Image 1 (cartoon, one colour):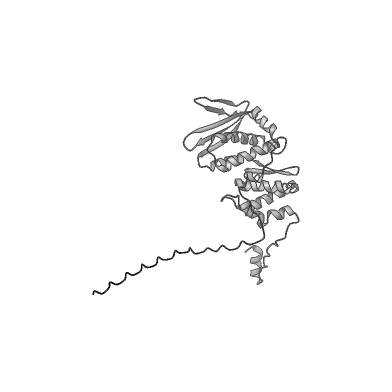
Image 2 (tube, rainbow, N blue to C red; image 1 turned 120 degrees about the vertical axis):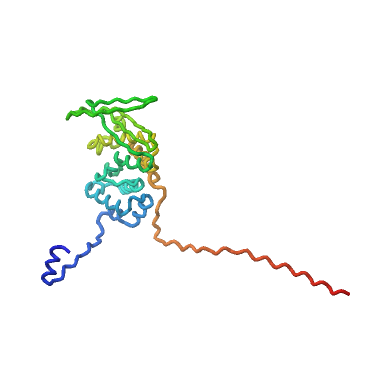
Length: 289
C-alpha cells in the first residue's frame, strides 16, 4: 500500500482502485505483427530454452523506441533479423552487446557483437575462457607460430599509446589446450572494406569491438564451438559480404497459420489375431465285438 492509500485508509476512505492498462493496438502494422501470437509461435520454433518469445519481443520493442528508423525497414528483413536473434539465442541492443539491429535504408541487418560471439563459443562447454585485445603501437607485443606457438602482450601505460597495429584472440580449452589468432590492422581493414556496413554503424562508432569480433570469428574455425556459434559465423560472414540471408540460415522449420484446428488423432486398438481353433476331438474307440 502506497502513502496515498494509507492516508485514505486513516481517513476512513477506500483506496482508489488501480486501473489495468488498456490493451490498445498500435497504429504501426510492424509492431502489431511483432506482438502477435502468430509471430511469437514462429520465434518459439527457433528460441533456445534460455530466452522466451515474450522477453525477446519486449527487447525488440525497446530497440524500436531507441531507433525509430527500424520501423521504416521492410518487414521481410526486419522480421528475418529478429528470427536470427531467436535462433542464436542472442538479445539485441547495447545492454549486453550481444548483437544489434541496424537499419540500412529499407533493410534491417543483424550485426553480431564480439560479446555475442564469446557467449556462443562458451555454450559448447569445451571452452574455459575466450578473450580478445587490441594492440597499440607503443605496446610490447610479440607472437610466434610453429612447434611452440606463443603470444606476449604488455600494454603501454601511456595515455596515448598510439594507433592500433594488431588484434588478437586467445581461447583456453577444457582439456588444457590454448588456441590464439592474430590479425594485423591491414587484415582487419580488408575485412571492413568487404563489409556492407563498413562505412557506418559499429565499424564507425565501435571499431575496437568490431575488430575483436572479426578475430574471434576467425578463431572459431579452430575451436570446438556449438552449432549456434557455427551458424552465427556463417550468417555474419554472409552479411559482411552483402549476400542475402535466407530463412533457412536461421530456422530449420516454418510455422504456417492456417486458421483451422487439426483433427484429433484417434488411435486404433491393435487387432488381435484370432485364437487358433481347438483341435477336433479324436473319435471314441469302437466297442469291442
